[in-house]
Length: 251
Image (tube, rainbow, N blue to C red):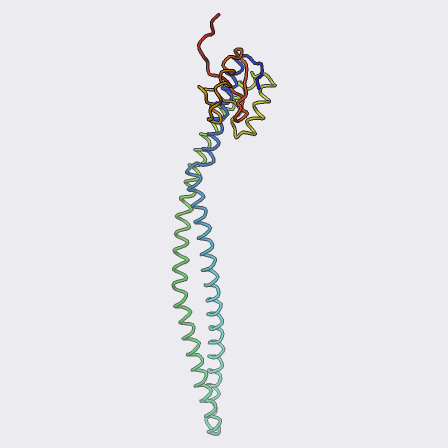
């Protein structure tokens, strides 16, 4: 397929293609900035830190709740024992059986308190590594947070630099595309959208620079003998094919 167009239009079309390629490269560079990837890793580390901290906080809260329950039990048992002790001291003339019962209960309450205090000590021991882990996680979170903040600044600076370069390319593209015949521009834009960003390519030798495949020799010969400024279509990929400038034709 061929299409009538001036040689200047075809060269301008290739200029638009080069600008579109440069813009796509800048967009890819912006999307794959190393700062962005490093920041994603730090964000993942912060999320993992938050998950581990939540688990440790939950474990700590459970231990603290058990400790509070034991404290309440100790307070209740101690109050009961002290009450019985006061009654016992004020009941010197009471029957021996009553005094023995009170003494047995006091001994039993002391044993209960000892048991509760041992359990509370175990909880205090269990709290130590949990508190140490929470402190370590907080320190790591602060360090990673500072690194992430620095990376966000570096990422913003890198993006701004790319955006500035892209603005220049987009402005040049708008000028160049505006100078193309509307039908050629529309055809190119449709091909570019369908063919991965490349709608026009140079024919260099027997090879299309768009799909990098060789065309049959007879087809290349036909294209080479088209009138100057004629736009051809690559048989292999369907892109607009612009022949490389050749030696002047004999008059």
